[in-house]
Image (tube, rainbow, N blue to C red; front, side, top):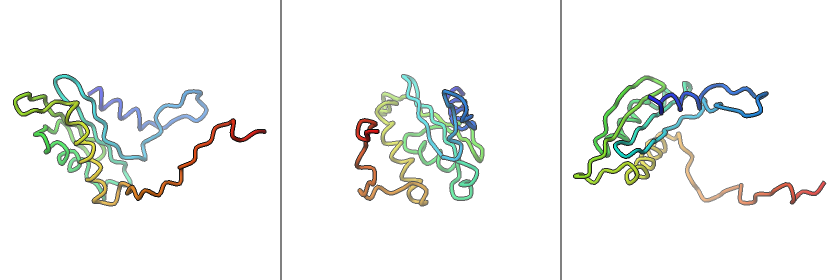
Length: 134
């Protein structure tokens, strides 16, 4: 529940006049992972304008299926799930997290919803204030 509330907070509209901005990412789909000792909690969010292209529940179920996870809740915009630690099956939250992130990204790539890494990065050069004298 706390992870779901955290993701909802990420999606709140932000007030640009506030000194410390919070939220503001409601137009961006995301899957957030929280690894504990006993479980890996996962919350997925699909923005309203992408729900026709990506089912939040289907996305979550695909990721959970890798390690026998359980769907906790599901709606068009948010889905939550959990994968329990199982030492007999070598399932440990910190160990499996990376493969789940990769699976989540691949799910989106197959639908054209995640940018491909073509190696052509326009942001190769990063400049600081000292590089541009007044």
